[in-house]
Length: 308
Length: 308
Image (cartoon, rainbow over all chains, first blue to last red; front, side, top):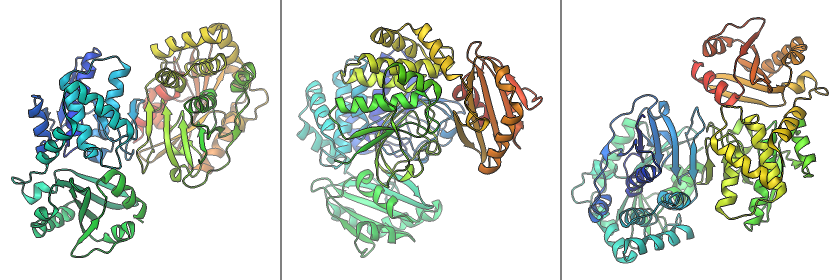
């Protein structure tokens, strides 16, 4: 039997990495042994912390895929966020919690999406549905992703279901959510050995709407000022990235995970979309977005709506 | 609370109509009373038979929708097969068993697809998951759709899951699958009061691939010869339809439900796609497709692959 490759999006976050591992585990429990979890890029500091904590090996990096390769996508569906050549793969399953854009298949498939805060919340349901036991390690990975995606339940993407399931998982993993969660999130804010190029690529997503190419990157921090010390350098690499990739609007969200706000660096020839969308003036190439922590729920829908 | 509209695809078949009704029933059982099933067009003879048999009223026809209307799509996801203006609706849920094409949302949503023969097979799983009782009438509607979509389990789209669930449903509905199924399918082949224009619209779907516009219509019959008596008239209305809608390839599948084969009338400026795809010559504008009964699994994937 041919191998099935499981992976999340480029610039992987904790949800993409852990969901790949957790999905591989589920498939094996259901008797499909020809599956393997991969990652599409370097894991971030937060994910590194999680994998070390639960003593789980990092998935290998997937460099390319063959035509007609069997794949399972987790935590994404948009082809531009996936591996190059994905449009020629045989997509068997998608487990995701994002809006659906730029997704096409020639064949019917298994597609499970729910408007919840984290892919792991959906995977939890699949484990339950198939009566597969969630052990301590799997519970820890799932819980970490929920904490990560919902910023400890503070993100507006967080649903009651995410909270309930996180509590269940914390019991199994024998973990105190607040203590572990803060430690994990803080590990992710350590940007000390990242170059400006790397910072804008830690968690960066592209979206196209009405012919406007928009890139929104996000970094979490405990101190916005600390990150802004390098504003000039960040702007330089953002400009270079835009030129190389034909981007019309680049937003770098610097998200304060302690106070749940974001400062955004906004560049490009279509910054008017951000000004109109958030009804704010850009000053010094920046915009303070009070209460904004979710790119998916508080940034992309607005930019898409105002991209004309 | 605003009303949520539930509907299947244009040129509705038994699955689209019954799934809308069954989904409305499920939503109400789950406490969402502001829902209503609709249809996008006239019901066919087979569906009429089913609704009469189980004494269920036809859903009202939905003529148009407002911007931002809350909708649940069943049995389809492709916008061109849905109501005009669907791209501006607020799609809350999709329950479907087709490939995903031309589907986009600005917000995350509930999306449940499985590569099974019928939408009702997926809905059965949702009823089970939420512990909602399937009564005699609901079971009868679900079973009818499975029989319809799988042509009494003979279609290659039919999975083991469809068969198992159909057997469960037959017990609840107290129905003999073979006897009822044949009677129901034959009711659907009664084309006596359909004009040629109506015949090519009974179950017609459009697909676009690599800039080629393809239309594949299907009619079920107990006698291919009977339908071919009107080949000239059918070709005339197909030609008119292609001209009006800019279609490059029109395939009318005349499917023999007793012997599980199809005769196809193939017209347009890109009939080469069908000839290459099925590796057969078109003679007298026709092509015999042995064992072909499923547009979704045996026709569209081939046409899409060979559309260059």
